Length: 277
Length: 289
Ligand SMILES: Nc1ncnc2c1ncn2[C@@H]1O[C@H](COP(=O)(O)OP(=O)(O)OP(=O)(O)O)[C@@H](O)[C@H]1O
Ligand SMILES: [Mg+2]
Image (cartoon, rainbow over all chains, first blue to last red; front, top):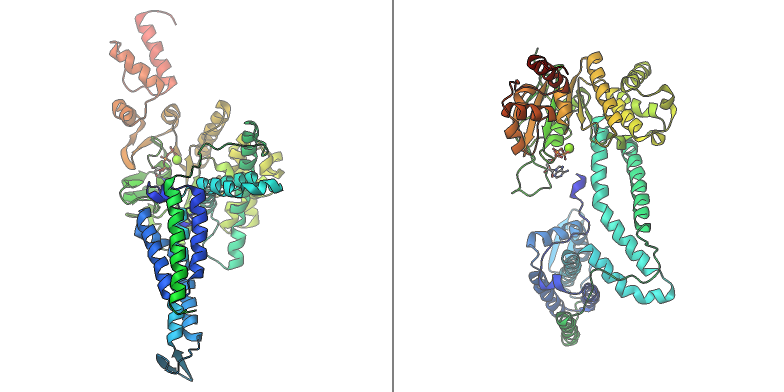
């Protein structure tokens, strides 16, 4: 059961998106998200959705995997669209549909329908580009990119590289801890502890025999890792170079240029057509 | 008397593995007789640990089922729980399962889950601690203050205190020093002699297997490749070598002696047998040893 959680979902590949500089990918993803929120009508949003689709194709991540990343927020999307659909008061006098339900009438207006579709597409686009980022960038590259982007903050004495190291280590140990939890759970189940049934309180109590060994081993691991790092002269201060060098290449600049074009297109389309919201 | 564990055509695939990869267990047939010591050997990754986790219902087979004491353990929730108590499982590196404040409480965890009376729990804890050779003074200590070997014994006692009909030991001597290893193995033999339990032992040490086991199951790539008495299995030295396994050192020496033309019997598996045979040879050829 515990194995189904995937963190740092990376899909190994060598597509143009995979080869891009992590810093540029991070920045462009952020910019893309901002642009998604700049959209005011279906034309500009359509342009962005098309761009997102092209990116998805470029990444060569299988469609099934992309769909899977939508699953966790499916409930949220359905919920917000239903609310938008029912709670928007239209300006026009003819509602699209009037459904009598017991003592109330459900009124669905043109505006309601538009806004529901609009927000749904918007959320899906957001999820798509952010999961494309994690699908095409290894967690270690992501943290390196983030570290480089935030490095100006080091001037203000923010320990950026230490934070980046902490993040890398945390990501590194997630699978290990999941495996460990599995092993401990099996061992305690063999001793008859009942982890699956019973009331909530009972189940929380039943997890003590799992959590105690888990914490003990996590602390032991942390101490061992600290010794190992210190014996290799890691101090946290000082300038460190990186094994994997990040380098901006022509495709990165091209991608930035494309995004600028799209941004201009969105602004123009917003201008020419009436806004939905 | 029927077999205590029986399964046939047992298949299992870890749910998170690719559909194209070979399953972790494939058509495994296994019978364990009451009171025997069955050793399970096999290359790493051959599915030994996966197999024993089927026996106490920790993993549900994708095909086939397991019978313990003649009952299908997957019949309903109750039989699943019963299986956990009938077959005790002592994992590889069991010391990470320790969690209570004192060793005594930790050993009592299993019996408590069985819903036993306080007196009975106390009796079982004492008995298990004595069987594994844990000092009485240690019982009041925190399990995290014990040495590595003591932790191992405390963890094993935690499984033994449930007094299951079958105890499975998954590489109980891994990572211990020679004396610690011998301690654990002697404890195993004592437990067997005093309680007449059925024991399953997973081991990579062929000498131990030859010395302790009645029968041997050889796992290879998720399949039960061979199943028979120690003599039958170690007589097939070439096949074992092909599977990345080996026969005991003594056996190899005697096989070499045979190839050199000495009249020694083929089935020599333990040091004692080897010594006896060498003395006999010496006496026959007339030189004093
Ligand atoms: N939790 C798991 N998820 C997925 N695959 C697993 C899992 N545990 C084991 N496997 C796979 O199942 C196969 C059998 O593993 P198993 O642990 O049973 O081997 P083993 O014979 O006990 O090896 P060892 O001697 O190293 O302990 C291996 O190929 C392993 O990669
Ligand atoms: Mg194993």
